[in-house]
Image: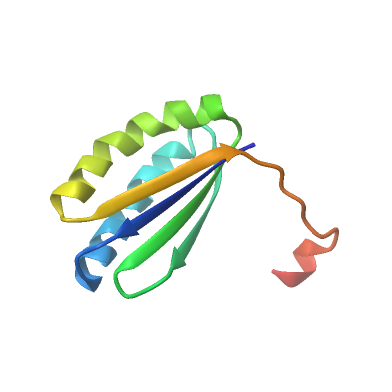
Length: 100
């Protein structure tokens, strides 16, 4: 599994809401090419963090093409983005479903 963590600092709360809507469109497209899960974390009024879970680095590379198209729009709106990623192991409780 490959994990990508993307932090987006927006100029204001209104821009953050708009960027979250744009990301939803990208996420739906990325899920067609190997994105299996995305966690959204609102860390402040103007900052959002996405944790994206990919089947593999190869799948991420395919989905990144969609992201690069929209990231230009994010930058044009004044957002500052940073991202890190890598191979990951995920461990879950056996009874995880009982907590959802």
